[in-house]
Image (cartoon, rainbow, N blue to C red; front, side, top):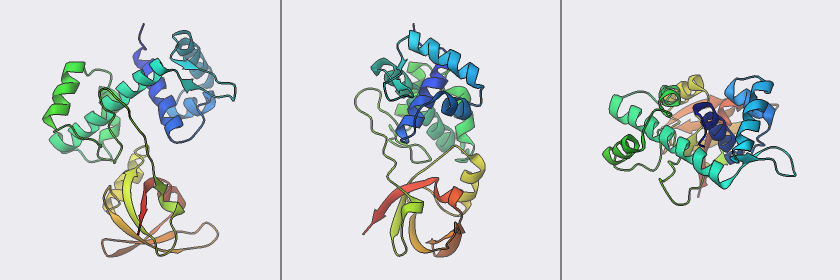
Amino acid sequence: MGATRAGEDYLKAVYGLLSCGERATTGALARRLGVSSPSASAMIKRLESQRLVERPAGGGLRLTPEGERAALRVVRRHRLLETFLARTLGMTWDEVHAEAELLEHAVSDRLEERIDQAMGRPTRDPHGDPIPPRSGQHREDWGDRLDSARRGDRFRVVRVSDRDSESLRYLGTLGLVPGAVIQIGEKAPFGGPLWISVAGQQRALGAPLTRLVHGRIEP
């Protein structure tokens, strides 16, 4: 028996936490999905009974091979839908996440294939997240986080977290989108802002924003 719509949400949430290097605990899942801890515990037990998740000796949860395949199917549909909504309907990158959350469970395999084909089989969504292939290996690579860069570094944006639409909207106005190249300036002490230069403009970013931007430091 496959996972329900709610079950798919949990599998995707487990995958999201693990791919960011976080532990997939009951509390973390409850916070990520906006549900109570008892509700999260009940769903986790159901997914365990379906052999989609398991509890390793070190604590937390991990996906079984079947659970990971199910999670990646949802992640693929979600990111394809975000790309479709942005490219075809002209929605902004801060709008597409919430809409894709609603649509990802209703897309058939045939429609998914049509969307993928019509868009030229994209490999990344508007936020720079890699789109899992229908079959074969998939790798989630977040690269370096912007707040790890040092003064004088040249930083290329690859991915921006889509968890906060307001932050996405603001970062978009600054030009901090995948492909942008940033020159790193001063970082104020005691938790102060990081000064950067993007497209010739000096900007100051607080820690909550620098933690959302990922990429690579270039020579």
